[in-house]
Image (cartoon, rainbow over all chains, first blue to last red; front, top):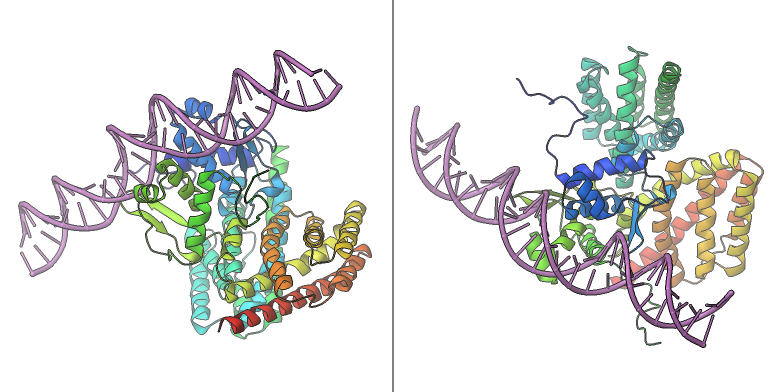
Length: 248
Length: 248
DNA sequence: TTGCCTAATAAGTAGGACAATTGAAGGCAG
DNA sequence: CTGCCTTCAATTGTCCTACTTATTAGGCAA
């Protein structure tokens, strides 16, 4: 009952120190506090400043290096690599991007990518889906309709439905993309329902997509997906504009 | 003078130990030697077996963990995560996949992804490309025609051309995808020209794509890209079949 | 000016020690 | 016998300290 900070997704609950440090430094980098080409403080200094061991710092730096953010050389120090070399499709990186204020250009890129990948995936899924997957999609939509998209359960069902569609393509690279995109889309959904109440009921479109996949109609599946994403983008754009208004 | 193994691209030239270990263990994991769900040897044991310090092992494990391959917990050890949680869009992971024998299903997924992303990107690029980018593409194609695709220079020019197309979309997520896909495609190209001599001259199709982008004709750009990838896939499939024949 | 050589510096590696966590064995009560 | 609880031990997590290696800046000589 009295468990403080349990339903606060922003606060981490007892993660290893190296993961914590990696997260904080990763956010600092992707939000521009350490711009590409600049050097990070030395390992000793970072460790001393945070009161932790150098090994922890090094493990964190290795993690960020594995994501393409950093490059370390003796004597030269640790440099932030050029943005083009970052592995932006990394789920952590995506999430960290949205920790700062959302860059409008990045959101645009994200929806553009969705508009490229997901309609094509829906086409594929309409052909390759199994009956079992179809049933799972049906159930996810039921859950979604039951709870509504304003609730965490409903949002989870939404995510599950879209993930199922990607998964049905039998293409593990597309599934991997789904995880990445999904983590980012979660953010837009949260903001959408935080700032405006029920902008539109997306259930009819979702059902349309489901019906197309059930009927194994690729063209209809594509059309339904395009509609879905386009509307989501429009809604998000409205929110972003509203926020910019409020800020300006 | 006496510097052995200097011009061997397969062998790493003095990389840090932690990167070396991460690479070797990463390959062992993605090629199935440590299957998902299984536990790795303990950190002490790995260190002792390889004759290195545990700190080096831990840094390597953190790198693999950052790519979604591992999950470590006290007492429970370090477990290989489920394949669905791997970050397959990571360039290193992609490269490591091809260190073993190429999984046919994975190659299929790769070309399917290319067929989804690159034609759409070409459409975009045809509209958004700048004159400077167009000129760079032209030069890359000239280099490609000059050296031929059988040479490293020609292959580099090919990569550069495709990268330029993606870059012209002004979408950094697509660019990031390009790096990933490109690193994998490099493998297929190498094999293609190692096992069969000049299966087909791809220059006309490349020029067709260039002309479409120059004319800002999205439909033509899409069509040309589809042709390019389809032919590359057919050629690769033939090689894979040939290799399977030779193996069986 | 140019080239080499030295020295300073920061990352890389090693190795040991202890703490924290947690899964599992074993004991206790029902 | 069953199920909960305690205790234990194994493994990762963290810290420390020393040393090594690579790299570059800057001095020195030609």
